[in-house]
Length: 73
Image (cartoon, rainbow, N blue to C red; front, side, top):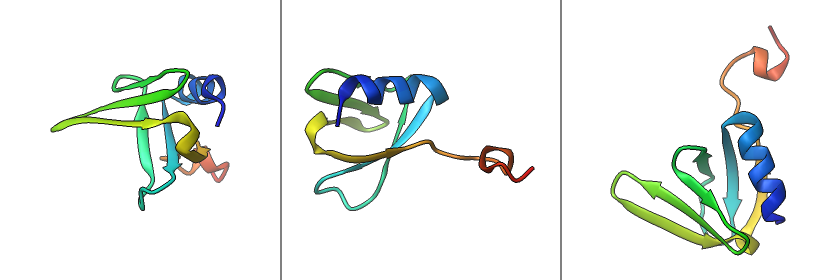
C-alpha cells in the first residue's frame, strides 16, 4: 500500500484500521503512537514496539465510533 496515502488517511481521522498480511486481527493505528515511513510502519504499544513493512498492509479503513460516523444520526 502507498505509505503517503496511509499517512493522509491517518492524519484525516486521527486513527486508522489496517489489515497486515500474516496478522489475523486488524490493527488500530493512532497519530500519537504510529510512525509510517516509506518502507516501515512502527507502532508503539504498552508493552513494546510492533514493526512491519508498508508492503504488508493489504487494507485500510477509517475506524468509526458513532452513529454519525456512519451517517445514521
